[in-house]
Structures are given as structure tokens and as C-alpha cells.
Length: 429
Image 1 (tube, helix red, strand yellow):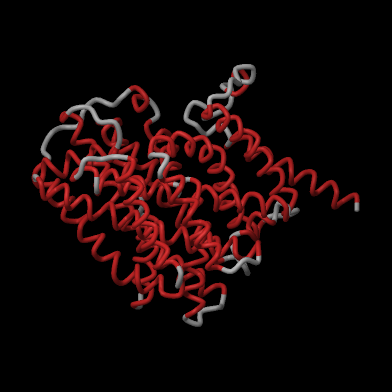
Image 2 (spheres, rainbow, N blue to C red; image 1 turned 45 degrees about the horizontal axis):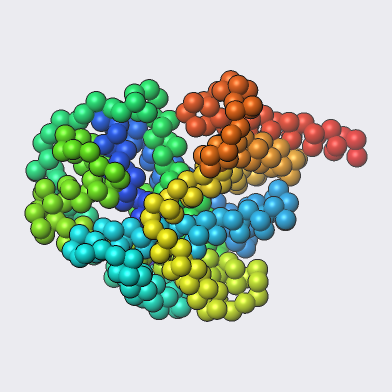
């Protein structure tokens, strides 16, 4: 592997490693207890494996991530890709990152108030916008400068935890008492990394193309190399901070993963721990926000014909407004949306790799995506609080429904049905 592969791999790690990556693994560890290893394995599959495959899938297309969903229909491609960017950027992803940065980097040291949140997010987003306005420099600024500082801070916290936290794992909470692997698998949705990878993938591919790599096979190979570096880093961090959460089970009750890490950092390093954790969170949330502004700015600039600079300013402004609504509000709204979008994104990613081998490709795409969207819509609406009890007796009969994967078998059936219809129409023609 050459130097650029490591730099791009570090950049991708920093782009992925944001707010959700920090707050969910510790909570999983705390709640899973003795079932931690099974649960974190499921979490890693959706939190690491799928994002890396998604980045590689972008290298398979000629233009951008929209091409993957255009294979269903151009209108679907436009709508679905737009929803992905809106979810991961101005509506949920970036505001969540700014809010987490405030709660874990600033709140421990000051008397909090809405005005302090307003001031912090104002400074935060001004800095994000300044770095984002020159996307050509993102590899150098993040890959070479910010990521090493971020990784070093994380390593210090983890090494301290290994030597200090010697408590046994607690018994698993009720939701991890059965099928912890599948529960961890679904929890991996909340990182937003698989759908974020559909946006970040084009940044990675563009970085390689800027170096003169245009041959598809070489592009895929190099993308997978950098993805391997990213994936290894994410696995080590997720397992480590999840393990810290599992070790904190006897230290009391905590409302979220941020509280767990804050308590662990203070227990390990005292007052220095809060400062160390603040550096980790601030850098993680900042790098992810920059990547999301760049990705969303480039996408909406292409489809609206507005300049990249204007779109970047608009994305940053909307993110700033929503960030000031508070972290709990952002999370409560984002979870149902992710529960709906994530299965569709997973189906699109898997189909991208099966595409060369599929017969009657469009029919298979349409059948798979239609059934996936139909059943994930039920999960999303239920998470929003809609009363769909009329359909529940049917839904509970689905394989893996209790594990949150009720859409999987219908998706496979939809693909098979689409193939049959495609074959019939082809024969008829």
C-alpha cells in the first residue's frame, strides 16, 4: 500500500467516525453486558462492513451514487438519493454531530444554557464552512492533520481503560437477553454510516481520480484497500469503546453513550479525562460535519445547478438551526427515518454487487426495492408512533421480524418475483 492509500483511508475513517459512532457502542456494551461479543459482532457488520461495501459500490458506477438507485427508476433515484443526503446532512447527521460535540466537549466545563449552545454551534459551523468551501483540500486537511490527532486521543483513552477498568460484565438487559447479534445488527443502523457511505464514497473515488486512477478495476481495488484501513480502525474503536461501556455496568445508570464515556474518562484520568474526551468528540464531530457538508453540497449543486458555495452555505445554515433544537429532539425524529431508509440502502448496496450477474436487471431491482420499502415503511411509521396494530398480526409472522429484520425475506421474494416477471415479459416480446 502506498502513502495515498493510508491518507485516504485515514480521511475516510475521520469522515465516518462522528457522533453516532461515539454514543452508540458504549450504550450497546452497557446494555448487552455478558452478551457483548455477540451484540458487537452484529453492530460491526452494519456499522463497518456495509459502509465499506457501499464505498466500493460507488467505484462500480460511472458517475455518482445516484446511478445505483437510478437502476430502479430515475425518479426513484432522484428522490431516494435526495432523502439520503437530507437525512445524513442538514436534517439529522450534521446537527446531531454539533449537538454531541457541545454536550460532551463544552457542557462539562461550563454552566449550560440555550445561549451557550447557540454560541458554540455558531462558531462550530463557521469553522466547518471555512474548511468545506475548498473540497479539493479535504484529503490533506483531514487525512494528514486531524485524523492522527483523533486516533491518538482515542488510543490514550482505550489504553487507560484497559489498565483501570477491571469490573466484570453485568447481566444483559431484557432487549439483549435473546438474539443479541440481531439486536446489535439493527443498532448499527443508528451510526448512519451505510447511508453516509453512499455520500462519502464519491469523495474517496474523486480523490483517486484526481491522482489519475480511472480504470474501474484499479479504482475498485484501491478503494477497497483504503476501505480496509478505515474498517480496521472502526472495528478496533467500536469494540474498544463498546467494551468500556460493558465494564461500566456496575458504576450506576446512564442515559446515553456520551454519559458513559464521560464517566469512564473521569474515572480513568480524573479531570484530565473530561478534557481528553472533549478533544476526541470535538474532532470526531467536526471532521464528519465537514465531510457531510462537502458531500451534500456537491450533490445538491449537481441537481439544482446552484454553485457549490451557495449550497454549502445553505446546508450549514439549516444544520445550525436544527442543531439548536437539542440532541434529544434530533434523535427522536431521526430514528424512525433511519429505520425506513436503512433497509432500502442495504438492498441498493447488495444489488450493486449482484448487478453484473442479474438477468432482467430492472425488474429484479424494482421487485426488491418495492418490497423492502413497503415493509421498512411499516417499521418507520411504527417507530414514529403511528398505530398500525391492524397489520401487526401479519407482520409478526415474518421471519426475523422480532429482530428488526422483517423486511429481509420480503425483499428476497420481491427480487425473485421481479425476475419471473422480467423473464415473462422478455419471452413475450
